Image (cartoon, rainbow over all chains, first blue to last red; front, side):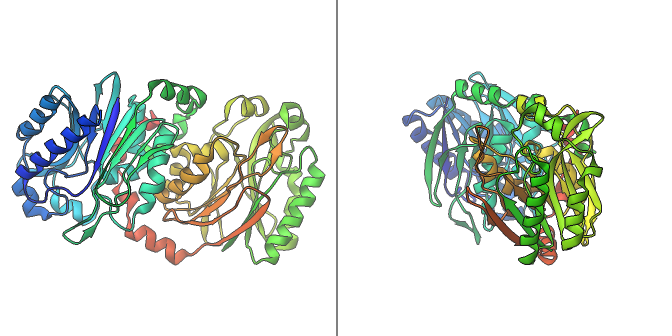
Length: 262
Length: 262
């Protein structure tokens, strides 16, 4: 499986433009041989748009039909963030749409970041669902979720091979892009794609530095600070070799970890 | 509190030389203003010495008297690894000795690394103890322990401010020194000192790259690949500011983390 990652600004306050931009990026990724394209957090609507706009733009999963059509027309899987309408409120969601246009996975951010998130998103996720695609198990997290070791660990324990993380990472959190992302890939022995915004959005400066890491923590591809598409290949043989060389998951001692879930 | 970290070879197969070298390093650290000196895993005996030598050199905690005398004479706290004799077998242990010469903390490696550890160490730790020194809470881990997110997290949840990690990190695990260590400091908002061997020991090549990281993941000091002493200052005001800026520990959702301790 070849992954493409789009780093760039979202289409602020305009879902129709968002869907059109999404289709264009998907076509570009497909033309470059990608089987899956991941885009940033709240990509479809913009992220730093405030609670009123987030509520006005929020859509139920059924509102994702234009993205599903793009995926099916182009035969490419898509992962992107959007404001999901849930019981009249907004969740910060990310969706995985298969290359046949079906919704395979819908995840709601479980860890809300400060007032920025809490003002916009009155709904939050209660679990870490997984899905299969192309013989791989996939999981989704969103931005702040990955800064905690537990969500990625929980997905790895559920057998996830490829962790897809739309984000909206701003200054001064460069440590996350530089160190935490490769560490999460390494400690969980998963492929990890971390797709950030670039540029500025209503006064918020995004740092870019999106990356795709391998299951030994190696940075396979890393973006700069501007708009960019990067690529990496999933190699199941390499993945298996990494897991055999270092049996982290049989060397764990869960009996000593009680306080983490306490 | 000013921390010194000694990176270098251990004194292979010679405890008497080990204690003498330890005193010399402690004197050097003290002369440079340090309040605490951390040294590598199995520093006192050498690490890659094989099961027979490890058993022959293993000592109970009462055998640490020369190190306690050095700490008290020089008025400096010491952390180092040694082969601990426990019920006739060997544990890969690390000890914290206070500046008054008292043993404040003795930790036994909980996560054994491959045959290398398992052949030498028939005893392993069953908990993550903490101690207080100079108004700070301190915890110890050893090498492979830090590659798992759970041990450091468990210590952070117990209130640890400063995590001290003697190690014997070899090729090809540079990802750990480069990324996992700053990530552990960042995600747990702790000061973290990671003290490695340098050089070669019975065919095992150590990578050096010891470091002291701050609670925002910043690398405060990092060694190269040879023998070296590095220093960093603990700043409680900075520590408090980091914790207030990003309330990771109130934003956690332990109710979702059950599988980690399951």
